[in-house]
Structure formats: structure tokens, C-alpha cells
Image 1 (cartoon, rainbow, N blue to C red):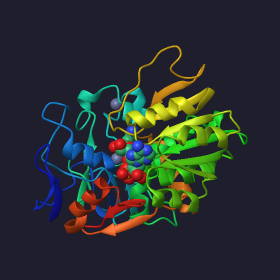
Image 2: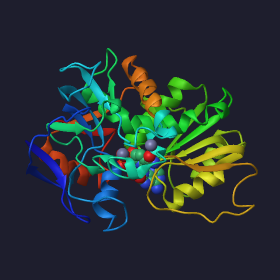
Image 3: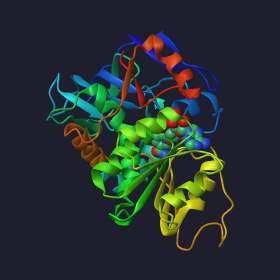
Image 4: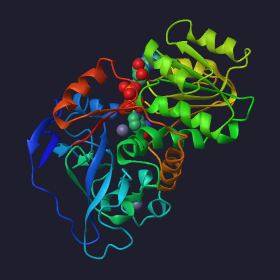
Length: 348
Ligand code: NAD
Ligand code: ZN
Ligand code: ZN
């Protein structure tokens, strides 16, 4: 079968012929219906070097995946060949306390995970291929009625990651609160919808691209703000001078982290999700009183079930651009140039 593979650090992936995977005991092979192209893949291709992570190339890209059960290994019950499913992407050991709660993002026994701190498309072969091996049936989540694999795929990361970030700030997102979403790309266009679907907060969307702001508006953002020098003042005005209760920074550059800290309201949350490598100096006065600064990584398996439920009910509608394996590299280049809206999903 054909697969889009990262062969070494600091390179673009290539389409190669590889062997079809086979399901061993307890494993599942999924026929891929969609594999989302995440900006993290660009970070992987261009920023990481040998030794930076516990794992490395070669591997097949694609860490947001959905499709249909293709083969069940010995001992797997409760799933059927042909059944539409999503793949829960963070792969932990499966038995530590965090993993048992479904929080495999923060597995406490990474030495026993399939690949320490990674997963399919992150050190192990991912979904940008016709078939994908999932090492344990617990990592398979059946799709609810009304959701197809093409649209479920981006929900497993571009949806799940901001859902987790929003969910942990729910208590601060009362009807008179304001949430600011910085970066309305793959994650951000779903973050706006998650806020609309699960809170009554006002949503302010910030991006440097006018078409991203238009998309945010289409999905219900109350205010859109162009990134740049005047952004903080504009957000402050939009909140009646109070500032934002919750900031989701889906970029993570110096400028966006500074913007988040500048517009947060006392007692607010600033959550950095984007990994553009920015930083800020932290001190007593670097942000308003009792602002919590936090990072989040992906989400839990129970949260994925909730996100898929929102998707099946039409409350989350990922904007999907479908491309073939052969067009994937070009799509990543367009992502790097800021020319994509919503999510590109590779359909092998
Ligand atoms: P994307 O390329 O689809 O979207 C990024 C958006 O940010 C674009 O709309 C772009 O115009 C906008 N942007 C860029 N610089 C900006 C700036 N200075 N100010 C305002 N807007 C700006 O990317 P994505 O796939 O949504 O991923 C976003 C980030 O989140 C990436 O860094 C990615 O690696 C990271 N990520 C983190 C996690 C996690 O678990 N923490 C999970 C998935 C992705
Ligand atoms: Zn990702
Ligand atoms: Zn674990």
C-alpha cells in the first residue's frame, strides 16, 4: 500500500510503498477514511532534530484518524469489521492510573507505551496510508450515527485539543464572560464552535488573515480582531474594558503569548496550545492578579467521545478540504504559507 512518510528530520515527507499492517492479538487495523493534516506535522518536518524526542523518523504521518475497522486481532471483541471508528491518538501504557482514566496524554509509565510520548503519526505509523495499525482496541472509539470518518478525523485532534482546553475553563465561561481565540486555523475554527456549542460566553476571534476571521464570524464569533499592534486595545474595548476571562492561544508565538497576558482579566485563564516556540518573562506584574497561565496537550478519551457526540449532532462542523496522498505535501506547503482555511484531510 502507499503511505506518506517522514523519512528523516528537517525534510518533507514522501509517498512510498510499504507493507500492509496485520492485526496481532488485541490489535485493530483501520481502513483510513480521513487523516487530518495538523500544523504540528510542520513543526515535526522542519523544527525537530535527532534526539529532541524519544522517537523519530521514519514513520507514516497522520495523527488525526478515522475510518472503518478492517481487521480485528485475536481476542478483540465488541467491534465489527466495517464499523466506522475514530482513533484516539495519544497512546500511553494503558494501565497506569492516568491511562485507566483515559488520560493517555499524561501516561505515567511511558516506558511501557508503544512509543514514549508519541503514537500513530508521531513516531509510529499513522493514518496517511490506506491502512493503519492501532496497537490496542481501547484506542478505537466507534463513531456515533451522523458522523462520517472524513469529518470525524479532524475532531480527534483539531477538535479534541481545544475541547479539552475549553472544558477545563468552563467554570469561568459564564454568560457574561468573554473568551478570546487566537489563531483561527484547524484548531481555532473548531475552538470557536466548541465555545458556541458548550458555553454562552462572548467569543472574540483573533487572526492575522482576513479569511480566517471571516470563517470565525461564519461559525458564530461575536467580534473579530486582526492580529497586530492595536489588537489588545480592540479586545479591551470589546469587553467593556474588563478584559478576557479565558484566552486560548492556538499559535504560541511571542506576540500571541504577550497578547494573551495583556488582555486577560484578573482571575482569568490564559491557555497556550500552539507550539510556535514563543515565551514570556513571568513575574508578579507580568499579568493581572490571579491569572492562571497554562499549557494543554491534546485531550482524554472520554473527551473524544464528547467531541464526537457534538459532531454527530451537527454542533461541530469541521471545514474540511479533502486531498489525495499525492497532494498532501503541497497542502502542507500551503499550510506553511497560511493559505488554508479549516482543516485539510488526506483521503488515501
Ligand atoms: P493552522 O496552521 O491550521 O492555524 C494556525 C492559525 O493561526 C492560522 O489561521 C494563522 O493565520 C494563525 N496565526 C499565525 N500566526 C498568528 C499570529 N501571530 N497572530 C494571530 N494568528 C496567527 O494550525 P493548527 O493545526 O490549528 O495548529 C495550531 C497550533 O497548535 C500549532 O502550533 C500546532 O502545532 C499546535 N497544536 C498543539 C496541540 C496541543 O496538544 N497542544 C495539538 C494540535 C496542534
Ligand atoms: Zn496535531
Ligand atoms: Zn499509562
